[in-house]
Image 1 (tube, protein in one colour):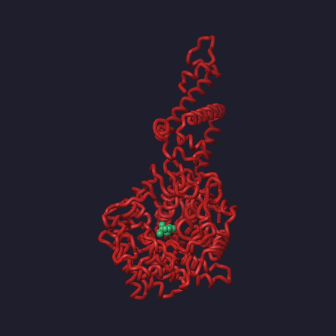
Image 2: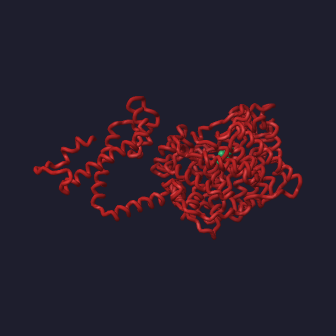
Length: 621
Ligand code: DMJ
């Protein structure tokens, strides 16, 4: 509202003629109020304008889907502030409210003494730091860096193992060199067309391969490459952009990658960037239940869920795979807010009834109720179970709740989903509202490693049983590889219609350089030292070399049952983060990243176990 229209209602006409310097106290006060209201309006307009594109498109053009999104109704202030409804009326109400609030604040401030005002400013600053919303380096306390044991390894004594390990390092060098040559700074490499590839999982964030590969470079002692990657991160890794990203993917690859790089190298830049990015992710939790959105715009802080997810639900494997990284963010920043967010997710889940003790893949973040009753230990569910177990292990076995949740969930999985085929292959089926789909995904194959990792802490009578189960699942996954022409596993394989461990649908026959099977070999090797796991790992290396290595890097293939490979032209960032790292560790000694000191996040980024004798700032465990 212009100042002129305010004046007649606020200024009291005086009969005396007065000079501008001789106003009475009331008049001074009124003028000050008017002036402060004007300033508030100007500032309001400045902050409002950058987001006015949505308002304009709502008023002058057709509404975008975001503007008509019902989830914005959950927070009218937020919706109005971002012009997301596109309605003038709401925006005016918001401006009027802000204006009235500003007037009241101005009046209040005028009545305060200068020392009181100074104290207010100080408290506000402290609050920002406490709430973890600061996002600047000033709020980061210095911490002492202590590298956990086993960050680097040594040459294996046995020449054959040494040679194989060296070969895997050469594969990493090849993958990295090609990425550097043809796609430096892009998210991923297209190894056939020799150019950069951008996945929409990361919005316009850049350098997914660089951040995902950092720790692999470090543990393989490729220090020049590590330094180049660190320099890129320092200069170019930027989160201040108008980008809609997947909270899960950015967390496991970018936050996880940065945290590991910090814990391995001690380079402060990684701690700083991890916390900065973690803070950028916090608005995703702004839902009625605190269950985060799947997608988040880093600039506006507006979140939403995948349009395909059952009735606007969040996904179990996504909101359930933040725990490890967020606990470490609290520890490294001294800000409890990260740990609080993930502990709240547990609280919400604890309150819900679980059908047959199982966790459905879909949960509505508004109502806090399950969506469709689909259960999977593969896609949409997988790493939720992994993080329950690893939360307990990473807490140096203090997080008893995580432990109980994991073993209870595993029991329900065993009862309801694990089956044996007539040919004697144990598999983990999917559950759709009580009916079993006899299909197992490549993603599900991580479960062999997870069950082996958890076998040790299982209730007494189940330790041996769980190692056996882990071994059986590993064998099934190996079979899914050997039963193909290219000796690489399909995306999903079935146990029905007369087949076992074979993909029957064309759209399930691809292989995209995924790590889960070799990940499980690595865990099984560490726990049993049965040579077959190294043999199986070496079979995978040979198949990768023969069918996935192309002139410009490594590519996925479209059909593992074809006689010769048809390449998909993507070198996934997880190939460097996970597949090659797990293969390298499979041929390394056990004291390289030993399990009693390190826990791998779901993207294979090692995070240190928080030892009982170490003071931690997360206030949680
Ligand atoms: C990785 O990004 C992670 O392992 C995730 O948990 C599931 N899928 C991919 C690799 O297949």
